[in-house]
Figure 1 (tube, helix red, strand yellow):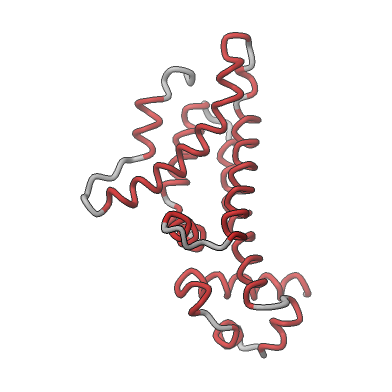
Figure 2: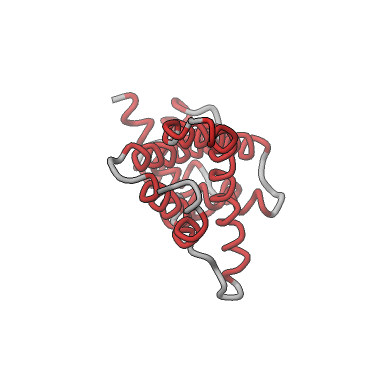
Length: 188
């Protein structure tokens, strides 16, 4: 019951933080959404900021779990990459809090903790990518295997940022198209 209540609070907070941000969300609103007292929230979280950071970590964990599921599917490497980029392309709709934090980072308005959480996620993402493509570790691909996870992870985040900027001009790029057109060199 203890973990269930904590998860309920995080999910309710995720909706509030995603819609209104950290500054405009109150614990009273989160408590009201759950029909609990604010003291119950303080039983599980030290402060609004603590709840916010735990909620952000929870959402990043969901993203990493979805990435892990994509890379564990029994499909070709090319299909895995396409699904990976499609997942990242839909962050704005699926992981709204992550998307909002990413925009804050682009605007140079993010908290240090938000940046740290994103950087940790990118590191974990690189590990997942590296594990997925470790079978390419013959001599011809040695340099590529070291660099590809870093490049793919950062490319996907960069394309999200670029598409945000290009959306105003209706010139956004499909991440799926990027994979299909540009990664033919090493994925069969």
